[in-house]
Image (cartoon, rainbow, N blue to C red; front, side, top):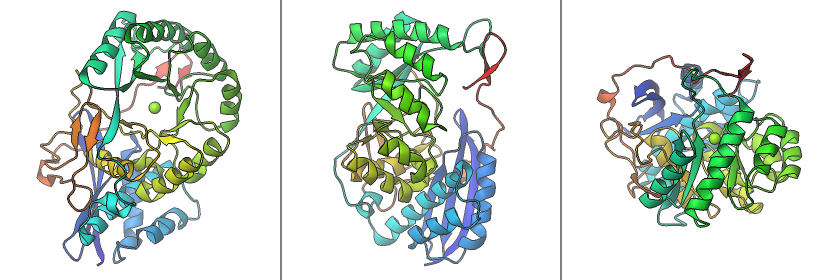
Length: 384
Ligand SMILES: [Mg+2]
């Protein structure tokens, strides 16, 4: 079998772009992948076009060797854009290999370890009352785990983010949510790298000891040493890693005990090939995977097949919460995809990923769009 074409589809679906990749072969078997470098999709498209030049004619069964060639061939190894491209290609290759051998992708990864994949949802509220109600509605819908966040958008300025004000509001709301919901739900929060070490510590100190089950990305990730300092200041479990672009970025976070849940993103880290290596490494350190999964059904399928085949797994992020209508999973574009229900995803047992894309429906072209560019009261820039 030989690769005959690699096509890119940066397209608008629902409320965002999706960066899809299709690999075709001389046997008529094809595979689909998706990249996760949200917001810089055209840079990924360029990287895929570079890789296409030397992947045409290669045997898709040799996906591990091709991973090494893609990662190491340009002298300037790695980086998020390149591993975003590698991820999409690697996922599409797994789809092809599964179809060629007539097995679902999880069979290529060691076989089923579970019958379905547990998921967590996310919910927001403008104030304490709304956040408590959101937590209750997620629990009532069947989610055993969820993240709760207080909206930062103010009426007068939707791009204002003032950390100390948000810490205070969020801590009050989360303490109230735990009191209302009781001890059973798993409750987390994602701070999206918006805090300093001191701010993150202050936030943790404002919570009662039983309030949070995990704290996701309180600070930025470039400096593991900063997390070593924060680790000394709180005992709340950390959930980190959604932007990590290789096993080497995970290395200090796993080996120094800095993350307690691995927020691995199959569409960023280097595809299924790289994700399975990180998964095994996490298993050795008793760390469960809690994958980042904010994209479309191809990301859901690829991540779920990995989740089916690893022992160390907690919950898959899913973007289908009560009241959310984002259309990321619209069957008009993806007529075959995993079955998504509150609190669980079930992969299809057909060969490959169990994904079909209606190419004729991909008519909405890529749109340039930026995430919010936030500022503080004094006008200085801060992370979205
Ligand atoms: Mg996050």
